Length: 219
Ligand SMILES: N[C@@H](CCC(=O)N[C@@H](CS)C(=O)NCC(=O)O)C(=O)O
Image (cartoon, rainbow, N blue to C red):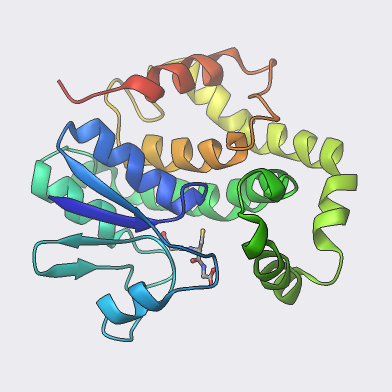
């Protein structure tokens, strides 16, 4: 059985969780005890990696080998033959996932992080804030909170190409769900994680796709 080692609100972990749910196969979720405690990952990856997610599959531990790789998703796809990476879609999937993981994720996680008190345990909050401020500067969470309306507007604009695509097909690249669908889904689930937001009302096809993706299982 595959074990996903994660934080439940992390965008990149939510992508893998949705793929595993879609597979219909049994899997185990293991949450790290604290945001700053990567010792389990460090040990399992033989001191090669500290980010989440990683997966364990029998004796194998799989983690991303590069900045924009999809090693975990490809492993799950191959093992359960999910058909998420057809050869003919490789190029377009690479371009889209870069857009989603950089442009969409960069806005979505800020909007969710503003509500960190809802999902980060109290005794872990100082480590969470320190981690964010070391990367984004002192007071970044307060800034994002003040910029919420502007960030929501930016997110809506970033998502508008998806709305256009989904007006013509059930999934982003046609009538079958591919990796890009789970990729966008995981990132949006992170944006929605706090329960404070919804997808833009101006994007009905995206909202319908999101509802479909929530319960989608391989036939
Ligand atoms: N490209 C990686 C990105 C993973 C990533 O950025 N994970 C974040 C959490 S969402 C992380 O653990 N970053 C390192 C850290 O927090 O120190 C993937 O697809 O898994």
